[in-house]
Length: 201
Image: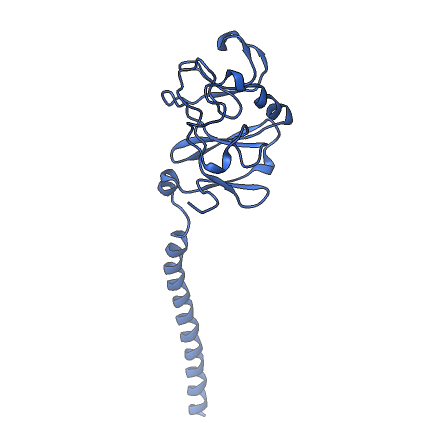
């Protein structure tokens, strides 16, 4: 009788020890796995240093611009309307570099639109003159603070540089070159990754 009771007690102890050991092992594994998993995601420092940034452009309304941060700089993502795109062709005679021959941009964004998809414009939002950040001015018409008729675009209030909605600099502006275009690529029809091109660079 005593042997049977002893066996039952031992079985209970064995089960308790197995459960306790399993729980302790799981906690230890979680403690090791958590830092490992978190290391797979870019830190704030890595993001500031240039880790790629994703944006769902399908959520941007036509005519709306969203600003991201990449490498410590503002990056604009503008969803251009058909009217905005039509104006680009009309600006050529007023621009210092209409074909963007001396601009900093990837090879895959050549042309008037300076974009992979014409309706989505991605640019570094820093004036190429002294590093101020221009302001989006979509209005078309006379604007005395910008000197005469304004076809819409970007205006830098620091020294009056003007750019069209493709970031091309207007004649007479202090800015020496068009706005820079960062490397970027489409993951799918909706998502753009800023900081990577199609080769993953």
